[in-house]
Image 1 (cartoon, rainbow, N blue to C red):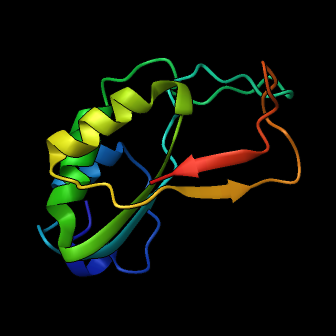
Image 2 (image 1 turned 135 degrees about the vertical axis):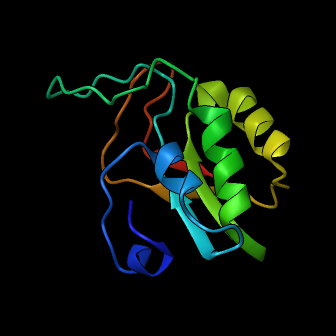
Length: 123
């Protein structure tokens, strides 16, 4: 794993929890993440999102993100609305205090059920 200065302006391929554990605490100004939504999503092209049906990574990942953030820094995380209770529980258990709800409006719909999903949600 790279040392702390080597993380700057780098792309690191690996398990996010394992990589974050090697990083120094309170060293990150902003975290933006678009993790698997835990909805077993199947796009039209047939690809799959790894771990979209397994929540074992959720608590350890947000625990590490919280540890890495500097005081008064933000984490923006997109999430799967059907599992907001799982995400909210993990965020709060890690120490986060949700302060807002963000919406990213899309030009296409990615899911159809009772409604069509023309947006992504984040906190």
